[in-house]
Each structure stands twice: as structure tokens, then as C-alpha cells.
Length: 293
Image 1 (tube, rainbow, N blue to C red):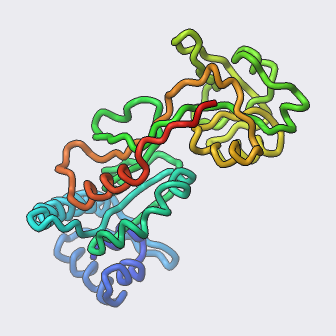
Image 2: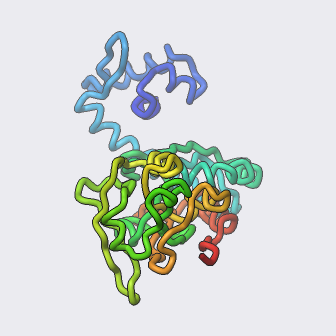
Image 3: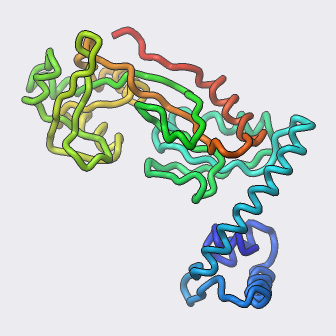
């Protein structure tokens, strides 16, 4: 019950998760604090917050519950029946385009698995945040403390609207981007650089423009409005390119550097539910490459 309160931040939400009454949760926490001789949760009229002792205890409780769940997974592995709660974090747009449509079929195939899905483009600490699996795009192999399985690879492309090209003409070489408005989508605080392939070697160009954002969606909307040239993973821009709303540029200089990985902590034995989910999405999505330019 304490773990549920710590994760939900509310007695009522914890009670709903555990299918008990809020008063039962409150009473259990009070008794727990009495046994431990320490206040674990600071209560106000509007919110709950873990005390320093509560944070320390929550770390131990989470680890203990994870160990118990791993033991249950080992038992379940004997019958080869994935079950239990799978907590998944995924990027917003990739999740909407590729993962969300697959979730109903996954639950249909594995009815004893429950999914708790968070869509976010922000950084996720798998261990601290309690996720079983994180799906993330990366140009290089992720953190070495994680095990990663590639779901998809796709070139990174540059594109612009027909209206922008009509006003400014299409660049014929990456260096020409210095004279164009470029729509930067990156979380990096430094000057943006776009990398291309020239004679089988990386070639970087510093770009700048009227809009800079951490969101691909912001860059996409600006590109569609004709504000500049944007750079996306191909799978993200594919619908707009096929519809003619965006035009693919500098095709001869593209690099195959974007990939999407399913990542999980390497120090733990992979739970059956997690393995089943990874195998399922890899089989359904496969390796996606862009069509010829």
C-alpha cells in the first residue's frame, strides 16, 4: 500500500489501484509509520509528499517488490504464460504511429498482461522511474548499462514544403543550408549541426532558423507552413512526403543514422512479459527502410 501511495501520490488513487477503500490505505500507512517509528509521508490538505525517510524506504520497497515480481516471472516461465503489469515508456509520435495501434492485438494475444504506458519525449530513468521497457530513438548505441534491441532503422532526411522551395529554391549541397532557414528540433543546448554523407564520410553543417524546439511536431508544423527546411527520421515525415505536403531534399547526401531501440536494464533477468512484448513489436514492425529517393 505504501508503494502504491508513493507511486500515485494519493491515498485515493492507491486505493483504486489496489481495489480497497482510501480509509484502509490511510490506516495501513499510519500503522506502518508507527512500526517504523518514522513519518514516511507528509500530508497537507492538497497533496502528499514523501519525507526523506519515505524516499529512502520507497527505494527499498520498490527493489523488494521488483525481486518478488521477478520470482513470479520465473514461475510463470515454466508455463510460458506472460502475465503481470508491464510499464512502458515510448516517444510521443513514434508511439502514436507504430506502437499504439499494436497494443490491442498484444493484449488479445496475452490477456494476462496489463500495460501501463507513458508517452513522453523526455529523459526516462528506467530504474528510478520503475519502467520495465523504454522505447527510444538514437543515432548511436544507448547507455551501456542497458540492453538494447533494434526495432527499426531509418535514414534521417531533410525536407521542406513546396511553397518554401518555390520561394527560396531547393539546396543542391549541404553547404547551401547556410543560406536557408532551418527548423531545428533538438534537446541539445549547443549550436545545431546536421550531418550528411559525402564520399562515405560524415560532413556536418551548422544550421539556424526562425524556430528551435525539442519537439519534432513543432518543426513539422513549421515546415508544413513554409517557414523553413526541417530534418526528421524518414518514418516521421513519410506520410507528408507521400501526400506531397513535404518534399525530400539532398537525397544524395543522406546518412542511415537513425534507429529506434527497445531498452531494458541489463542487470536483471528479462521478464517473460517484457520478452514477449519486444518479440511482438519487432515481428510486427520489422526493419523499416525508406523507399528509394
